[in-house]
Length: 327
Ligand SMILES: Cc1ncc(C[n+]2csc(CCOP(=O)(O)OP(=O)(O)O)c2C)c(N)n1
Ligand SMILES: [Mg+2]
Image: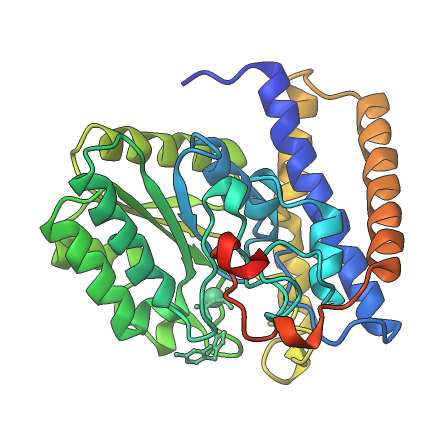
């Protein structure tokens, strides 16, 4: 599908907004205002490219913790994220009772994952089976890190979807590390996409720093899934620019030179360069977007700081079933 200039700018805006929200989270952590942050910096192109290939709010998504840009593109606002970082009651994923970045958003059919990595793969295939049984034309997009594709649940979930030709798109965000462990120490193939041939579904590797390349690859997989032709596996390759989380000191296992070298392929920079070259983005437009993002982030922090914590008696309520949570 050919993208209009407006949609391309919208994609850039989503990447930029997610980046500025993410950067503020690091600042809040260093100020001692929040306890934990797990960052999506470097992952924005893969996530926004994937989100735009969906019918957002119609299709289903089972994301993982690094998906701030994906969730932003699905409608999870900067205020929602700040509320979640501060554990406040109005936060949509869990009413402030789950760790931050354990997303769910009912308006986006995005379902919360558990802390054990790869369990969301099973949820995705389960939802895929429900879609097939109901004869709907929806698809499920699920995301994961490359390290977590060594986990049993991942194989089980992908295998099930392949056997039953379920409408699932499995995205692997290969950021070169699973905390401190590089891919070659946890898989014997060069790419998670290579695992597809043993499971019986198409596998493809795509440049995860190129938002438009990811969009094209995921769109193709979505089309296949919607037509009933089954699941696809796509590895998007990028680099985790930040430490694993705010609790990690990455100086113990990688050099500063390596990180700096990889920043040259910062997806935000790549998208900006491309759009400027195509004449689709001017300096004035970028300045306007930056000012808008700053204002949104400032307001989000203020709103979250002023918001109340959940009531103690809410602790036992479910995180997704709205009628039970509220009722
Ligand atoms: C089953 C399980 N084992 C270990 C962990 C601890 N853990 C959390 S994130 C993570 C690394 C995952 O790396 P990867 O899948 O590459 O994703 P990334 O964080 O790089 O995006 C680990 C080992 C966990 N949450 N669940
Ligand atoms: Mg990883």
